[in-house]
Image 1 (cartoon, rainbow, N blue to C red):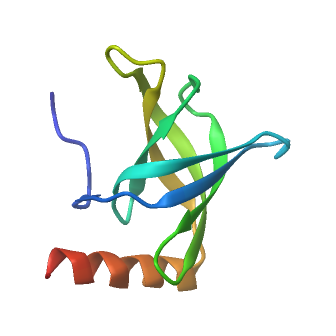
Image 2 (image 1 turned 120 degrees about the vertical axis):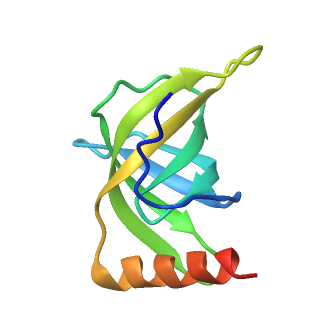
Length: 110
């Protein structure tokens, strides 16, 4: 399978809050599996179709990173009732993007 990522990812687990858009009424909490400046992989209890958009809050150590993200893929984990889901970031303010970039650079170089 061809690698389509534009940026390196870090395998790391942080709490995350997800709101399903556009209605924002459905909220679920989960953890990250990996993270990059361009997107995130998370675990979820239900299937989400490609192109579904979510508002996410990633709870990094001392920062909350807010972003709007789109489902790129969602696959059932073998022997489990959970799904792994890949999201690409659609919108993130400059401050949050800079915070995430700084955080990831610290991990890359540690």
